[in-house]
Image 1 (cartoon, rainbow, N blue to C red):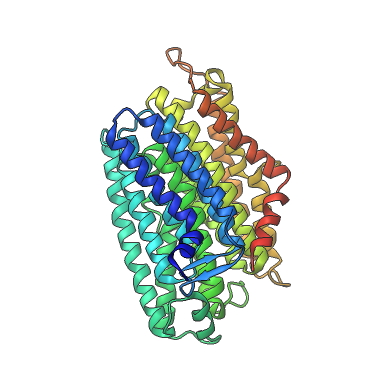
Image 2 (image 1 turned 135 degrees about the horizontal axis):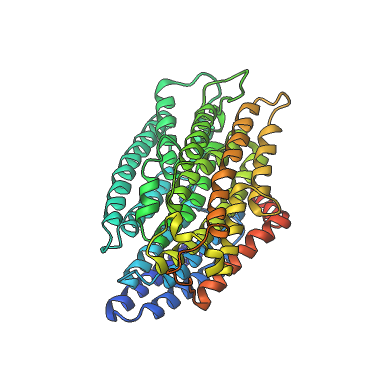
Length: 484
């Protein structure tokens, strides 16, 4: 294969790389070019989406290091779209300095996400994780005027470095037992039956690394501080794009590479493998995330702990397995990511106007900005799983896939726990809406103003959440068709 042919197949990643370098150069050349940097970043991401549509339907390069498939192409588009909305969110976040450098880090993180969803080789997956992680660490600590941002970045970096070490050790054990790092080849080398100790250690350590990335309990301790202390656009991208890519690659690893050693998480017939490990992570995440979220009085911290619970819900589909389970996971993580970007957009506008993001800052938001209050209501109710919003169908899809996985309803215990967690979550989401619509605003609180770009993007996200709730088959059918 010639270099030009390879460049054509990797054109979306190449376009984002060139955009990142161009935005960085523009930002360094002129400190007042923030609007042009945003425009150029958004334009580059739009061109990258167009380049994805021009890719062939299937191609495999370098033994799986770069894989082009309907699934990879679909989620490259989703990750780029989330980055696009984050660029718009960063444009409306007036507190950010060095805007060109910030957008360059965001674009580099997007390249890492694209490598993650487009690879089926463990070493390339690890490189994608590190490129994404290093960029997100910088984005978290980017606000030099806020000491909480530096603290959040340091905690995120320390936890992330430890998780990367676990992942790399796990990969080395798996390589030692299988003699390869390609997921398809690993799946052929592993055999069903009792797990060998070193292989079990490798699988568990790899899953621990990804449990950190998706903020699953008990590896979630970085999330509350990162979500609260990071600049709002950074928190939005960590909660959305990073989660989507992590679940895609986690599904590839367990369904392609570790498929022969799945085991069983059924309550009456548990068998050792990766399935009971993920089931335990899901159960603990649902309990810890929902119960701790009840005690929060800061909206961003509440969203962080609810993200832990949602990681538990999303793991249900992977534990269930099969096309239905994996497609349910991918659908849910996609609609959840879009909802979180919109919710953080509202939080960012309120924070810019009032100086904070506690419940008190949202008091009477309905009277100060009906549009923002309405959008926030859609986002909160979707997270709670209220019909006819996308979150409701996402949870229904997940829970039904888990119930149908076996004739004797072996995962009923996990589904019942998820339903209980959803009931708890309804309370704290309604508390946020009660503060917005019922509580009276202070007399000296100004109206929350949003520019046309912010209003348009938030309205579009809210309508998208509503649209995918009423016609979910548009996205669900596309995801199912993209699966092998």
